Length: 343
Length: 185
Image 1 (tube, rainbow over the protein chains, first blue to last red):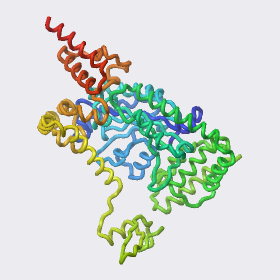
Image 2 (image 1 turned 180 degrees about the vertical axis):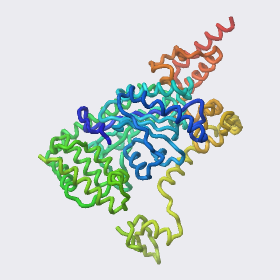
Image 3 (image 1 turned 135 degrees about the vertical axis):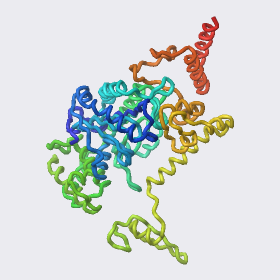
Image 4 (image 1 turned 135 degrees about the horizontal axis):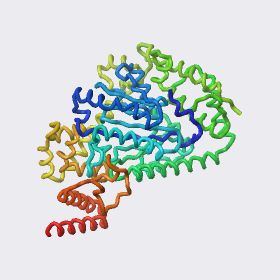
């Protein structure tokens, strides 16, 4: 289902995921906020036949998901895996979702903007992803001309995304750096470069477990390469600092931290979402420092996505109440963690 | 923790009562709390949407507050293609169609600068790959009429002046002057 996490070749334990998002609209049609059903239908009819061509250019299989028949849980699960955004998850009008088999690539049609292109992969590789998504971007714009002008660039539904229509992301694991007292100063400083640092997962009143998302705040006035360069630079510095801190960490404390979490995940019978992420974060640390060895064909990050409520329910093909979700989450974790060995 | 009243659902709402100077704290589930207080809990996403709306209005208004002329101009703008008024745009921040950009252009500048820090695009276009933008050739291979060229240059000049990019401003000024000379014969 989420095969792109399996490839551990370029795995990086600090910069977990790179992601490029492009927003585009077609000039011949009104934007989704004002368009009618006929326009939706027409766009669908013009874009969907391109799927075989997209497959050729990307070199991978692409499915048109039967999104209109999806249950709320199935939609939530896609959003939790970051394949679609919250607007698409809650869309009342008909939208189309195309995704590659491995879920690295997705295209959402007729949601907030006519086109939302997304490409994600494990590790630090923004510009590679941008290059890969180019042929698709070009093909769509050649088929139905994009709303674009010299002055404004790509015209998006809101001015927050105008210009390049681009957002570049990194998902980062910063357990040590984020634990330092001056981390908020660090994020403030990064803000000066137009880069936003946000907790990937938050729960009111609870301390972060070190999983962060960073992305560009501005989409205009910078070239696509500028955006990727700034972000890659910032991520590189953060990662360097994090690795250095991990390297200097007390070995006994590090082992204690990792193995406590390992023990809990291995034997717990019920598990809150937030708590599970805290422990999985420690497991990630354990894997990168050789305290734990994974033999199964999965990554810790994949488990972090899998323990979310929508994905758990879709995995079991059933609807659960909150308490059952906790129990199923603990079951799910015990199953996978049992294949991880402690040294 | 389970709800103190029904004892079935998770307690999500904390209610503190102060009676005769003594405070008591109770924990209830959403449903029981709503029943007892008659208040429907405002969900966090509704809160954040309300805040977003306030911020959007604030920045749309703030950008024209000190400029009465611009404010009046904005109030009368309507997109000729989709019929969206500037007022509607200012309320939800969403464009109705591609032509809205041109329709609202006179008043978009400030909004763009306050949100993006700039009001002109630098990246690639559908027909061309990204190049390092050379301020000497803002038009690339796009066919633009001399009048449009002048307009673009003037917009860039104004922006450069506003952002105190003096070298760029001087460059655009010279470009404008040289083009005017040419067209004067």
